[in-house]
Image 1 (cartoon, helix red, strand yellow):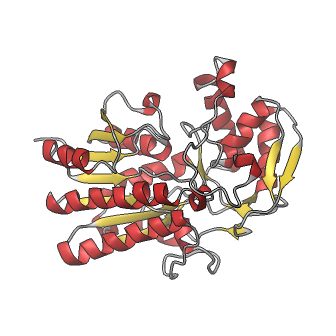
Image 2: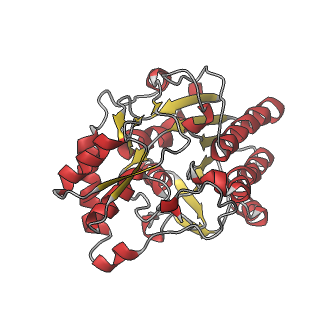
Image 3: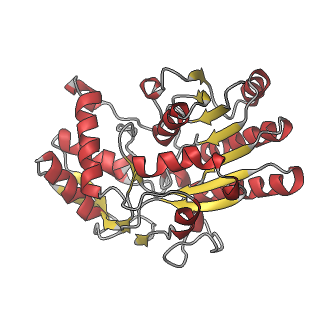
Length: 338
């Protein structure tokens, strides 16, 4: 009897590598497709088959589906810089939308069992709080628009072709194996890197804006095991923390845990919502969601330990940050992103 075969796109990245680890632990044969634009080869589990390449390369995608009798697609590949997406519109739609359609096309042709897609609460845009799955999405940036377009396409593919899907909308996920060098996203990683370098923290606006920061180990196992729950097929779920914290509170927690204080500077407010948090009643109804989420203080402490052990044995590595090289529109680009 052959193993269940799962394709994990973005499996060298943050959430994708954790999902791949859980799939392997439950007996799946895992094929990872990742172009390493935001992930790292060191994140790839040695028991997975790794293919370096992009989902936007349709010929490569077709070859993979031809070679492997894939049961499940776990589509986590994306360039998830929501704020930056205004300035990289072409790149955003090519990678986050067209690349996804390549995967959906082949999934339909090969009659896979289920297509799992990690969307984002960015699809809600300005909406009633707490954000619930029955709200009408209203995305306000190219990243959210691309994610919602993929959601709509999956629903259309289900109606027309019978392709089963599960959509998760995670938010503000942090933890071990996150891209620590990205200057445009992952505020917790950005703050940690700045503190290690004795640099000032830059906060947009007053720092009073709140987000529900979600620890990776609270969500990755649910995503990995979800395809075994057929009641969840063709459903959409918010997934993440129930507890909003302000950006200023996050900065204070990180400085306390790292035992180092640095100056805080304030940049002009970005065009973003002040408070964003979601309802998770549905995911708790369908899955064995943890009764007690990992507290922010505990999750940050674990991430700090990982940073110390895994990345910075050579302090010179701190000088490296990933600067996006193909900005398409510089108008209104924050100064700290240039």
